[in-house]
Length: 358
Image (cartoon, rainbow, N blue to C red; front, side, top):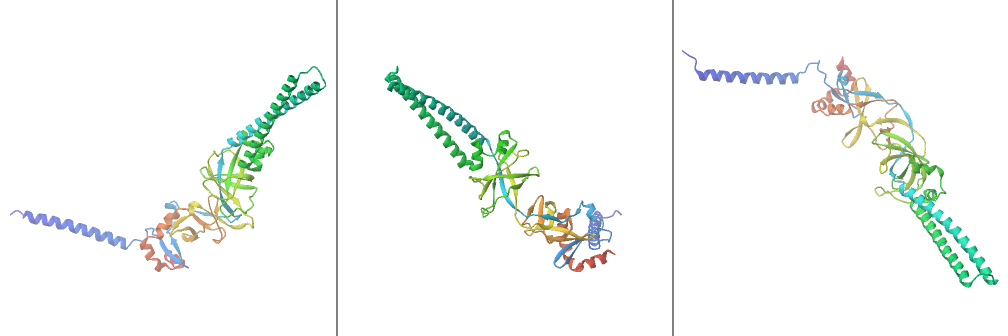
């Protein structure tokens, strides 16, 4: 007698259901009873600071890199803003002033010649010499015309010099008038770039330093700029006291905006520079992970008030700390895993974590 087909189907369905259930139970049991060979991080808390404890080899497997940051002397800087100006209007003004001075010299010579000729003709006419009244009057008319051209040339030069002074200040305006600093001639040859540096609002009373540090962000390059003079113009994008600075023109282009570090007076501070790559942001604050013991990484807040080259200058973390400069985001994600945070109470101290490692 052949088996009932319905029974065969029911048996097959029951077998599949039992297989699925057994597989789920095995997976759940394995997840709940992980073997000690699996590298599982843990979170401990000490003095309110969360610490991620990694198993051996985990850091290397995930490309984490730790560096010892040396203590450095640092002079705080104020952040200012710079823009590379187009020097052609200033150079064109210098050329126009030079041309106006040439025209003035020519007009002065012509006026002097015609004046002496008019005086000669007038003398001869009065003495009854061989000079007609018409010739004497013609000579006087030429002199008056030359005198008018001389006055016009003087007025043109005066107005150009005023334009230079009003638009560019005393130093650059004087250079345009060919009476300024000879060192600014580098603008003509393109060796020097002219910057308009704007101090933050409220810093107008601060004496501008003779030199400032320029950071070209796009190329991560640094340079020094030297003070030229105060500036009689404003940056349309930034409000504040403005000054002209000059710097080598390599690596910068007209119109580029640059980060400017203005050194502040006062004592140098000692601390460390935390690289930007070491910073993770959480709850609106900047943090870095400090390796306080082998495989123990404590999350530490990093004040971001003092910007430094490629990072932030910080005091108070301690001398020569070991900071995670690559992989800090991985530590933060491990710290914030719910199952690890839930177990933090069972690993309340680093000593207990060390005991678990034995």
